[in-house]
Length: 131
Length: 131
Image 1 (tube, rainbow over the protein chains, first blue to last red):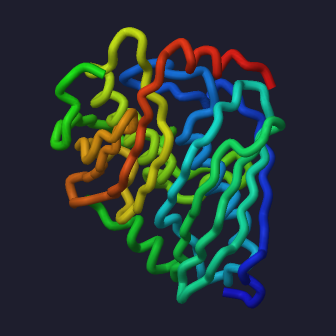
Image 2 (image 1 turned 60 degrees about the horizontal axis):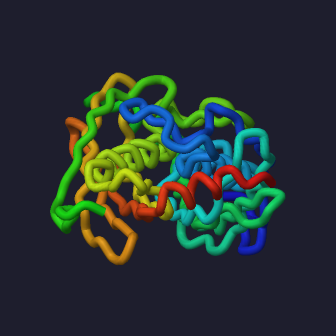
């Protein structure tokens, strides 16, 4: 990792909630016509990765490992959400970010996302291994 | 809630990983060509909801509240995953399920998902509230 990935470093992401992000499941159909928890997680992952990318060496990659989220309030389709990732700790190869998602009404979700920085060759080899 | 939603009750879901489930983000493109963490979360949510639905009264709905997941191993496109949700605790209106996702090689992910059982009218009203 390059120097500078320290507690307090932030990244941001803006997303307008669209129909592809609502709580709809293949076997259950449309559940709630609002921003789904899995979409919140997707945008948390995206924002955390955006944060880490500038600090990776060419031989490194970052792999999502763990996520915790509490979804506090619904967001309708068409509303903008703001995602903020803030580095909380970097221990060994683990980058732990605190995440907050908000819309015009206030906080939508909060959580923690952990990425592990790995050697790119090791990771590509892991992906290539067949079942 | 109808009686019977007790610790140990299980639901299952089978999914074949396809291209729509890989780690790809709008602002970053394709990150890893394998089953994404947000898709793991989506299927955990789907399986937990499937578990709870038979126990809801007509005037009730279940809303996802919190999720924790650790993603342990990659799953390539085309491989089948099995999701199992098991009730761990039902406290007041909160249904806490333990989730495990596995493929032919072994465990892929594990976590916890919490749903809250709410009065359907209250929830619909909450969704109707504009920004």
